[in-house]
Image 1 (cartoon, rainbow, N blue to C red):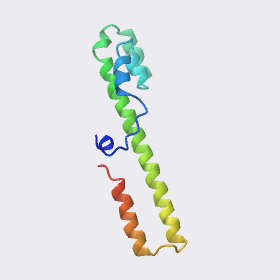
Image 2: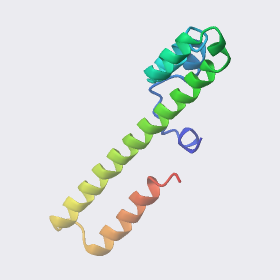
Image 3: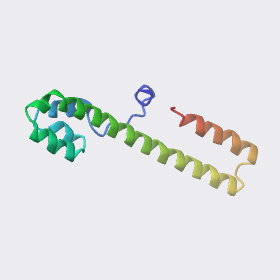
Image 4: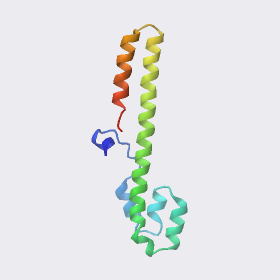
Length: 111
């Protein structure tokens, strides 16, 4: 929710689509990249209609969360590397480096 509120959420999979595919035999699980669970739900269809939409929804949310964390980690690493390079080249001093490093840390703190 914090990612969405701060408009940084990477939505690779639509939770609504995952839930909709859950109505099909194993569809929600396959959509959420859980093929083993998809096969199980396929074999248990039509009973799996009771839980597979939720699996598709939650699986999509988990994928989006993981992709968002990955993107934010990469963005933070990139900004930190750029800042390190500026310090190494003498463009900024140690005091300015520490202040800007704190800003970067705060920018990417969503916990």
